[in-house]
Amino acid sequence: MNFVAYLVLLCFLYISNRHLAVNLIREINVKSKELKELRWDYLTINSKLMYKSNFSQVVANAKSLDLEPLNTPPIIIELSKKEYESQN
Image 1: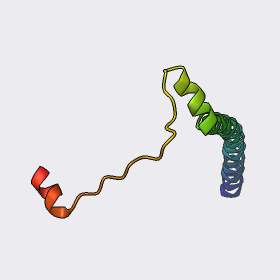
Image 2: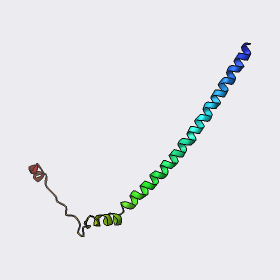
Image 3: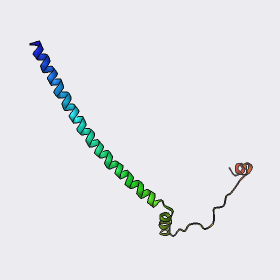
């Protein structure tokens, strides 16, 4: 009788373990599909950002705001340490 109960317990553990493994595999498959979709979304957004941050696109967007790029380089202002401290 003890041997039969032991076999039933082993069968129950085997079936429950198999059931949990199948559910885990299904969940992993769902998560991998979600990850793949999120990766494609990331790549799409990243490529749009790279396109919009090109200099030509920035200039085109700035023109709609009535802004123009500088034709001369910026002027570098240099202060000595004493001048800087006297301003603060």
